[in-house]
Image (tube, rainbow, N blue to C red; front, top):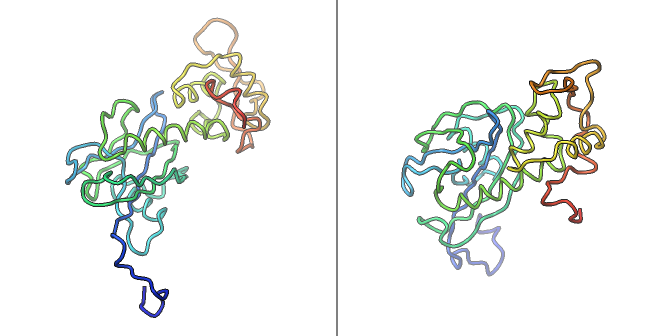
Length: 245
C-alpha cells in the first residue's frame, strides 16, 4: 500500500506476517465409486505424501483465481466443463503448516465426466483415488476433505446435480446408485422412487422407453434430467430426515 494511502497511525509491522493458500477438494463418481483428486507432494514439507491440490495466493489474485490456477498447474485440469468451485470454509488453526502461519481458503466441487489428471508444478503426480483409500493426507487435508464430503452430500440434497452422473437416459436405480455412492449409505428403493417422482422438474420420463435390468420383473422405465436445478422439496439423506430445513 503506498504510504500516502495508509490510515494515520497504522503500522503494518505491528502484526506478524502470514501467508494465504488455497486448497481444492474435488470429487467425482467413476466406476460406481466416489473418487477424490489428489496430488503427490514433490517437495518438503510432506514430500511423497498425498495432498489436496493447492498453493499460495499471489499478491494480485483473488482466492478463486488462485484456486483455478493451482488446479491447472498441479493437475492439468483447466477449463473443465461442469466444474463449479464452491468456497467451503477458511482453515486458520495455528501450526497447521510447519513452514509458517498459513491461512487456507478451501474450495470444493463434485465434478461429472472428470478427465484424467497429470501432475505438474510442485506435484510429482496427480491421480483420482477412491474416497477412503487415500491414507493420511498432508497438513490438515483430512479435515478439509471430510468437510468437503459432507458439503457435496448436501449439494445432492438440494440440487439436481446427481443426474449429471447418469447416462442421458437412465433408470431410477441408476440415479439411486449415485446418491448411495456419494452418501455412503444404502437407500430404500420404493421410498427413493417416491421422493424423486414427487420432486417437480427433477426427472422426466422418456415416453415408451424401458431397459432390462437383469433382474426379475418388468423392464425399468427410463428417465432423463428435468429442467429443475434446485430440488423442492429437498431429497434429504436418511440421517437428516426430520431436521428443520
